[in-house]
Length: 224
Ligand SMILES: O=c1ccn([C@@H]2O[C@H](COP(=O)(O)O)[C@@H](O)[C@H]2O)c(=O)[nH]1
Image 1 (cartoon, helix red, strand yellow):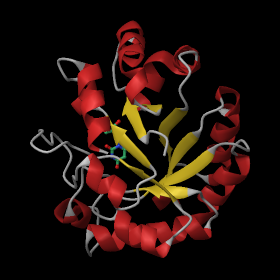
Image 2 (tube, rainbow, N blue to C red):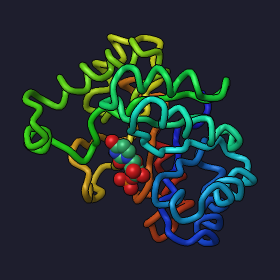
Image 3 (cartoon, protein in one colour):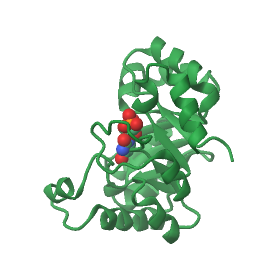
């Protein structure tokens, strides 16, 4: 099995981000670039990262009307991302149009419920029920819209995997045992998520903020 770890390169400066990626490259299978990276360094920053030779996951969490999201998907074709995110709560038509506009080799996955949210946070948005129920509901919607998979926490991935056998499941909110959760609330270990059916393990700070990022990535890889 190829390495499922995608390191989340949430760093404000381009050169240190590229240097860090070169250090950890041997121990990860891809790189995840989110809003912090994209808004700071744009398409040219993405190309600089792509030159290092790892698959690119553009975690832009698109969420707008269908026409606008489809236009954004077309605009990022040239960057040849392997994976792009949209918010599943943007609705079925938005997800259908996002998938239709994506490049042939680009997986489109729907963010269900952010891993930084628990039941109380969800209730404050006006949604009653558990995070588990909300993830299952949005997973069903994403599948019916033709997406490749979803983003969910490791607490739900086992159940979603049973319901959507061919789905592609991206799991952030991962912490090796004993490491600080920070702002993440629905947390599991990388090994647990992998055993429960995660296709991609998104790991940021446990690697990028480690004293020795290459050693941290190697250690996590060794637990899988
Ligand atoms: O529900 C979600 C969706 C996306 N993320 C992203 O994953 C990484 C996690 O970083 P850590 O430093 O390992 O906590 C980050 O880039 C988020 O934007 C998420 O955490 N949860």
